[in-house]
Image (cartoon, helix red, strand yellow):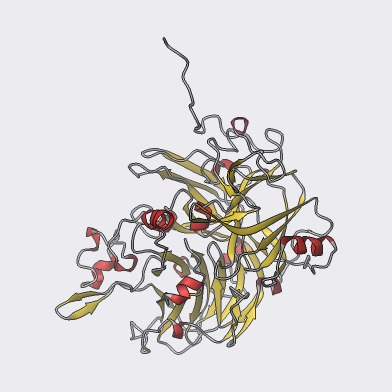
Length: 557
C-alpha cells in the first residue's frame, strides 16, 4: 500500500481513496496502469476503433501491452509481443495502439514483457455487440461493475522470486488471489484489534438477472474455482465464443481463460460469499483461497453472517464446468462438464475435411543446469534480436525440428521456433502433454486467431505422441466438427491431448504459448506464421520503431 491509502486498513474509508492500491495489504513494489490495479477498463463496441497510448514510465525496463483476445486483423504490429510483432517500448517513450475491435467478448490487456503482468500490469478489455445492450433473453443487465478479475499475487516482486527459483532452487510457493485488485490477506493489529484490507463487493438488485464476466490469470499453475452461495450460475460463453446455456453450481478458470455467466438474483435480500480457491497442486497444498461478496441492494449486512469460508469449505458440490487435472484428480462430489461437451447456439465456421496442415506439439519438461524448462517438441523458444513481423528480412526463423538449425548445449536447444502455413489453410494442431501430474494442465493461448477444440482426452501414464499420431492418422480419434464454440485459450490435460482446428485467414506472426507466465518466460512457445511476407502479411507503418543487433563498427583509424 502507498501513501495514497492514508490510514488504511484502520480507516476502511481510506482504503477506497482514488489512487490507493491495497492488493491484499502487503507492502511491496508493484506495477500499475495509471496508478491502478487493475488498470482502467477498456470498454468498447464491436467494430469501434480503439486508441490506447502506452507510455512506459519505468526507469529501466522496456515493456509491451497485449490485448488478449483481439485478433489484430490488418494491424498485427499492434499485438504487443516483443521481438515478434514490435520492438519493446523503451523507458520514457510512448507507443500508440490503434486497431479495430473485431472480436466481441470478454477479454483483457496485460503486460507481455518480463513479469510486469504478474506484478499488476493488467485490466479488462470488453467488446460488446449491439444485442448485448438490448433486452437479452438470458439476462436483464450487462454492467461494467460485474466483471471479475482473478489474478494470482505474490508478496514480493515476481522477478525476484523467479530469479531465486532459477538460481537458488527456492521454489515459487503460491501466496494469494486478488479479486479486482483486492483481498483480505494481511492482518494489521492496532490497540489489540485486527484489521484487514477490504474485499471486492458486487452489488445486485433482487429480481434482476445479471451477466457477469470472469477473467483469470496466474504466473504459476493455480486454476481458480468459483462459486456463489445460494446461487447457481448459468454459463453462456468463454473467451470470444458463446455456447448453449449450462446451469452449474461451480466452475474453474485457468490462466488466460475467460468465462461469462448469468446470475439470477432470486435469493432473499442479504449478502453472500463468493468463494474462490486455487485448485492446482501447489495452490491446493498451500490452501490458497479468497472471497468476495455478493450484496443485494437494501441489505442491512455488509458481510455475510456465515464465517469466512476455509479452503476446504470453498469448494462446492453439484455440476462443475471445466475441471482440471483429471489425470489424477477425482471429483466425487461433482458432475463434471468438460469444454468439448459444450455446443455453440449458432453454426460456426466450417472446419470439416482433411486439414491442409497438421502440426504435432509435444509438451515435455527438460532439466538443464538444474533449471526445469517446459518445452514444445524438445525446443525452448528464444526471442530473435529483431521483430519477425516488422524486420522479417533481418531474422532467421529456420529453426524447426526438421531443419536442425538452432543453438544446442548438450540436448538443450533454443531458437525462435516457428511453424509456417499458407493463408487460407485449414490447420489442425495436436497438443500432446506427456508430463505427469503435478505439472498441471497447460493453458495454451493463441494470438491472432480463435480456434475450435474438436477433441480432448486424458489418456494416462502410457500416453505417447506417436500413439496419438497413429490414432489420428487412422481416423480413430472422434472429433466434433459442428457447432464447436470458439476459444483462444484452452487447458491441455496433463497426460492427455487436445486437438484444435482453425482457418489461417489472418496473415501475420502469431505467438502460441502457455499462459502460465513462468512457462512462457522459460520458452514454452512457438510462432505461427500465416502467409508470406509482403504478399499476404500487412506491411508495418514506415515510422514504426526498429531494433536489433549493432554488431560492429567500420574502422575509423
